Image (cartoon, rainbow, N blue to C red; front, side):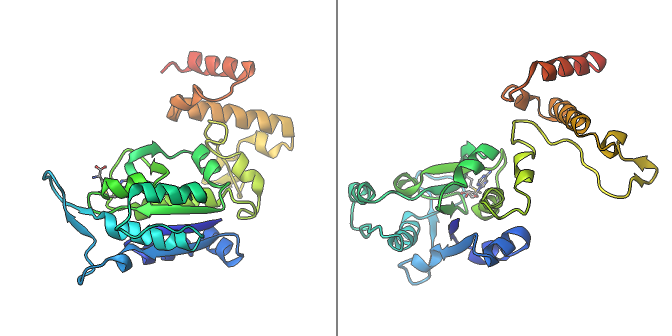
Length: 266
Ligand code: SAM
């Protein structure tokens, strides 16, 4: 997986991605990270990337030109030749008709809510371009030309798209084959089946007087599986009942949930 990030703060991305599992995956060549500083593509003396917003309103907006030029330079390395800024939107689309438009994930509150399913979808790509906004965001004209996937990481507003893009990259990286030691862990985690994960325990068997649930020490595989399934169902019902509507539940799951409801009505 090759990540390309269009950003005003490349060091922020590099510093964070170099740690832990993503850092090791980069060392192994399973992931690569190419940060493009949008400011390097300004054509004014002071390398200014933002300006006032037409129609008034608070704050400043990132201008279309440096974002477009940074993107243009990046895709030229992928064999796509785009016109300079004296060209037109139609010419840009013509270039994409000749060569597949790369996927550009725009981090924005005005986008689809990021989910594990989206992460799975992104993980199948060879190249992913992330576009990070700042200030009040980015001029809509360039977004219309280049963005394929506007993505929001939650119903709140951050100061910039860098943290948001790292959230998405982190979630996607775990699904790239070879990045996690144990592939199974990605398959049984929260959201993988629209259920939250069951509680987990490690040594010691008793901590501050609290014992690990006995079933987990029983060595009885089927009982452990049933306990985990029931705990997942209980937790999902408690914290994220909205997920249960999408989850594929068996008749046994439904009976169990009905029983839970009867014993502790909400
Ligand atoms: N004016 C914008 C709005 O109301 O939608 C918010 C701009 S925000 C201050 C600056 C940048 O942070 C955005 O362009 C985007 O890249 C990023 N950002 C903020 N919140 C985000 C979220 N929840 N998900 C993804 N990106 C976000």
